Length: 309
Image 1 (cartoon, rainbow, N blue to C red):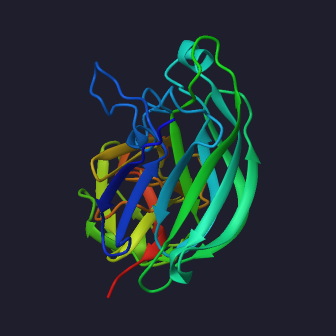
Image 2 (cartoon, rainbow, N blue to C red; image 1 turned 180 degrees about the vertical axis):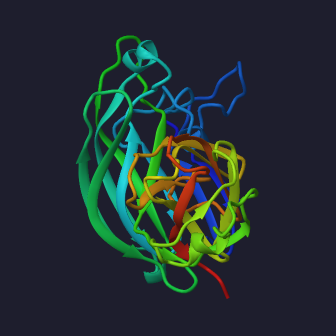
């Protein structure tokens, strides 16, 4: 039997240094592009695509590996099969048991964790806690490898398909810069209130707030989450939130509360906080208030890595 290794290396921001991913094999396609089932398809945020093992290789023993920066590895999020629809999910084998290995490149590639996880046979994301494991030093990061130990058989095809994989890293508070403030401010409610760490003060828009947008960033940090804390009940409050970073967008529904709420920034490759640069925050619509303008008391950021010099 032959064993091929797919290797893709991406150069990211200094906070990440370099990041890559690789798999033991993938199914080559004659239509739609030879590499459409390679490792990258499990890291694109699209459930309609998938990494698919070469049918000439056995499922058990096949592996997928992701580089991570200096960080603490906290959890894994996985979509166990090809989740394009009910048919593709049932037709191809799904991951059931995976061996998780973590290697610390700051310690010459030493294995620092071996752990087994079991997935439910169901569509959608599954987030699994693993023992917190710190990797990396000032120069090097680490690697997370998942090796297939057991699968749920498919109805029609023999080779495993897996739609998505994400390594969730531990978060820390990050400094915030409001690089593009929102336009249309209610008199006396300045944008300085957004980042003053005082929830008693708040910014308010001049209109109802729907369509309000602003831009935040944290230089040198791999930002993983944006926090929003709404203003007082009298003001309209953010309801639908849209985050855009590195040309990827995610939309969330916020609760009607004055507590801080956190929303994940779209990752670029394989782990949380793998993007870079500014993050656009849009308030698409709001919960109604009795006073004019949407109110936001605080905006905050969390990050998973730092590489600023």
